[in-house]
Figure 1 (tube, rainbow, N blue to C red):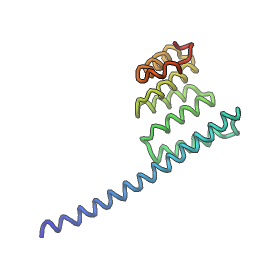
Figure 2: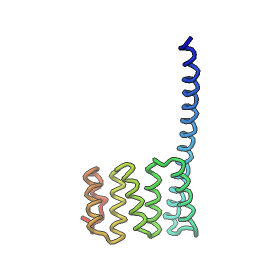
Figure 3: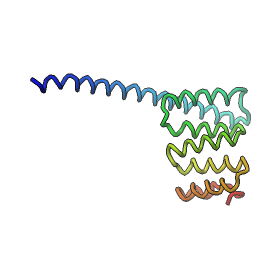
Length: 149
């Protein structure tokens, strides 16, 4: 009889856990869609050579929503860093790339961090970031700008 009494609370807990995972999955999918949308708009603006007025603000708002939905998605601070770098604010790009590296130290993050640091005229820091990127993935050596080699 005691075993049957424990089955119901455990079953309820399992159902609640399943519901929680479903909600989490939906949030992650929505965050991914927002991220893809921002990247698409940015790439279109880069191809055209100019961005519509307010694009940076709209993109940053969308990325803020994506971060709220999926705080562990490393693509969000990477995309935020790229927005800042493309739109001319290397210091905020550096902060964003550092936040991304804290989540997941990927070589391309350090490559972009180096680009932002170079843009902010922090040449020594940029060289260290580029060196780390190349150490993590030697194939990135050709992507390091000449002035930082």
